[in-house]
Image (tube, rainbow, N blue to C red; front, top):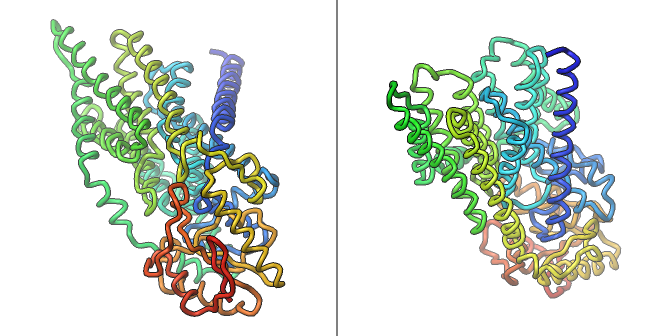
Length: 551
């Protein structure tokens, strides 16, 4: 093929990729972004972004237990969004997931060295999108930012020459500045791919972290950063103990069995037996993918994701133990995909590899595709299209019926554009609407007294476009974000230091469960320690239906 033909082919591929990503992102955004809102997670990352725009230094001026690249990445949504901030942010969410799906599928396609066509890649990318996006809340989030950077880097790793490797490892280094659990990805890819032989790649993957520490040193936030970034110490529980379950075990056994059937070699005269083995292996793989798709209907993808992870591990273990496959690209790809899924799952609130369902599923489908070339490739195309259509139906169902911390879409009749700054075109349930309306009454009560207001414990969604800056160093004052005594004391001290300038608006009811009713906050609930402290040490001034105001 001539150089001109290669350039023309690459341009066509780039045009197709861009069109696919924009089409999927726009279609899902228009279909689902309007539904659901909860003032806890929604706006959490955007509230941090607002602080950066206001000139605050991460860790020094506000508490953030993760590196601050994610808030920085989402500052354009605050600057450009206006009253449409949440609407714009939700488009970015779907755009990122479309990119994750395309980049991940492209990486696996190139690494497995198979003859997957572009139409096939589009089919697998759609399956990847529906399984990876599943019912996860439509919001700016650090794990999604990290996955986006990882899959972008791996896509470039598979299509660019070796001289661009340092750039690729800079991207992998940036991923752990979104969430520190991704710190294992860059060294893992270095070792698995053999890129460790070039010292420049080590430096490139370390540079983002070095620059981040340098930034904190320049602005005086190193000690605060150390205190916050290492506040959580439960990696053994979320990274190992959570994987010791029956779903992973069943996945490993299924993966090994499928690999034995797919890669079985027989002597002449036994072609029918080999054909049956290949059929059995493909059936196990697509049966698992359909099982995960079915779980979308019941909003149980977080559990079945462990089965997908185990299956990838099982196939990789089997191939590694075979001498003819021991360290080939198929094994390397399986290890990298599993590593990224595991890194994404290291979380107290979402301890599952479900966000990486897409790459996990495409890797398994890619193995089946590679073996399908030996016989009946049309059968494989038909089952792939069937799986894709089924996944689209299941995805639509879960997006309309299993909305994060909210009611089904048909019950979301209250538009919050007139009561939440930046919330235009977003709808929620009547309970959440009443809660936010009452919050505005409480805020007006404080402002009428000529004072600043702070809100605790769980209304981070108010702050991204609020007219006033948050005077406290935390937007979501709960146990996960304030897991150490030092961090809790910092919040308490900030309340005491500004007692003559501000009033504290305290929730009476729990925000996470607003969709199902108004559950009172228990003073003995250590997760919301700040509520008990304020009620015990500050003076109550006035109360509304859902809030108390203290000074």
